[in-house]
Structure formats: structure tokens, C-alpha cells
Length: 299
Length: 129
Image (cartoon, rainbow over all chains, first blue to last red; front, top):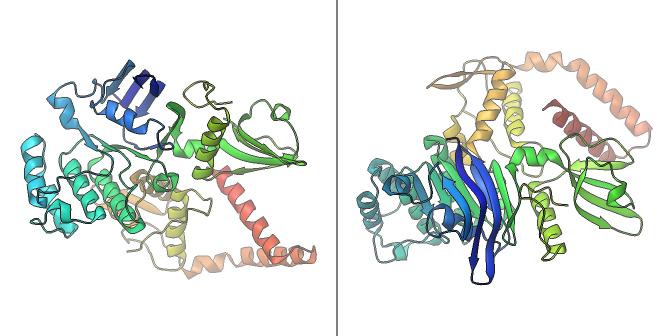
């Protein structure tokens, strides 16, 4: 088993509304995976299916080689922190650790205590009295001390201020380095994920538009600026993701598996954020028309 | 011990930024042979980046013959690049100076020179990978 998550034609609908459509994915082990997409794209649905809290309507999924929540053993291998890093407001920090110890067979009490010390949290403090950043850190501590092989975090930093955000990600990366945990975390902001994720999934309007290792994606995409022309006038090996024209100039964002051939244009690499936005915008432009296939050769 | 910082807007791959900062620390004499580099865990706990990025940078340093990993102990600098090596690059600096004079004579402005230098450096950095 060398995939952390494998999904085939996965779909989920709530009545008429399609929350996830034809999602086919294979995420290799040992990555920090960023799941990006606008609000309402289906990120939470996908994550909830992955941890077994929701059953898919169609398709199949395996997490660490087994169906999600297949049994106590599988549950112990996957950690999940829901949106807004929930904690029990009336329970103290120490109570949270006690609860974690009782509920998780692989609980690492030393690690949990050490992290609480490091964070300078008072064990007697009730979670309801903690700041947003501290609550997020407490939720992360409980999830990490469970010693999962895969940690799933739904928008963990969305509600945090920049300092708490950075702190949270530092602790998350430290724990990844220490325990070799695979991580999937979602965000609607690419800037949150840019430095921590080495694998990216772009989900827009219930469909996966792009997946791959961040570095490969950055290497494969270019912004081409040239005199005004049609996308069809570009070399065929360039897959046009996004285009914009003025009366005399055209700008394209293209994907290509090889170097961009020389020509009467300037070709530059993109930042991750611009790359992701190009996919999101072109999906929005296409409106409700279904996209092509899930690895993102969207045209 | 040195610490790393990353510039998201530089257009240079993060692992290459780390390699560059080690090289620079060697040139400045902040690091020399036998010094231990911070562990992957120490680096990521400080700068919140993916651990694989740091591992990749350290592998690259090994590949360049600047550092060596001792399993279970850490990664150590194996070569010093002190003042001597900066002096070795004197001729390079002279070439750059000549080039700058030619660029100015050709009518390039200072921002134009910066842009050309940075674009070319970025292109040749991506070609190397």
C-alpha cells in the first residue's frame, strides 16, 4: 500500500445538490496535501468522506488501504480535526488529554503533555476560555497525540490571525517531521498552503480540476504574453488553461509537459496562487458546463 | 547554528533558497567545516515549511559536496568556503564589472540591468534543475 487515499468516481449529493462529482484521486504517502477551492466547492464533503463521517453516494474510496472507518484499527490510524478546530468549551485542557487517552488506543500521553507545556497552556484552563489560536493548538495536540498515520484538517487556520496561523503551521510541520505523518489540509487561501504543502488538489464546484506535486505543477505552468492571437495559434503542446485579450495583447496561462518552445512571446513561471486562481477563474467562466477529466487537463 | 528564511516572492524554489543561504553562510564564514546544520525538525518548527523541502535542500548540499549526513546524528558541513574562495572569484567580479559598464553604455537603466540579471539568473536556475 503506497497511497494514502485512493478515490474512484467518488460522488456525493444532498438531494438535488451535487457536493462532489466524479472525483478520482490517488494521493501517495508521505505528503502534506493542500486541498484548495472556493467556499462551497466540496472540500469539507471530501474530507468527511475520507474520515468516514459521510458515506459517498457513488464511487469508492480507500484511506490507508481500507474503506474509511472500516473498524477500530482503521479509525486509530486517521486523525481528523473538523472545521474551526472544535474543542469542548466546558472541559479543561487536562480533561481533553484524559478524554484523548481513554478514546484512542495509540495515545501518546508524553507527547500530549510535552506539547501543552511547549504551548504554555494551563492544564486547568477551560477550553472555552482559550484564545482562538490556543484552541486550534489544543485540537491539534489531541489529533497528533493520537499518533495517526494520516491527519486530516478542515480549514484549520481560517479563523486565526496571521501570528496564530504561522504558529499553528510551525507546530504541524514539526509534528510531520517527527512522526512522518501524512497530512491533508484544506483552505480557501493558497497563501496559507504555499510553503507547507508539497502536493496540491484544486477542487472547484464539486470537481477536482488539478492534482499533483506542487513543484511539478509550478514547473509545468507558464504565463505567456504575446501579441493578440487565438489560443489555437499557440503550439499544440501547450494546454491553455486561461486566456485574456486586450486589443493588441494576449495573455495565456498554459500547462505543458515540456519546456515552452521559443517564439515571439515571453514565458514566465507563475506563483502557486496565480496558478490556482487561473483554474478557478476558467472554471467559473465555463459556468456549469462539465469539465474534462479529473487530473486537470482542463481546456 | 544558522537559521533560514524564505522569500515567497523571489520566484526561486524554496529548497534552492535554503541551499543558497547555506552557501552564503559558508562564504561569509558563518559556517565552516564540521559545523552541524539545524535538523529538519528544527528548521520546520521555526519557518513553517514542508519537511521534504528541507530534506531536499540537504540532499542537494550533499550532492554539491558541501555537507554530509550522519544517520541519526545530523547533517554536517564538510567544506569551508572562506575568504579564500571569495578571492578566487575575483576574476568573476571583474567580468561582471565589465559587463555592467557595457550594459550602461548600451543605454540600459539600473532597473533594466537588475531585471535582466534577475531574469537570466532565474532562467539558468530553472535550467539546472
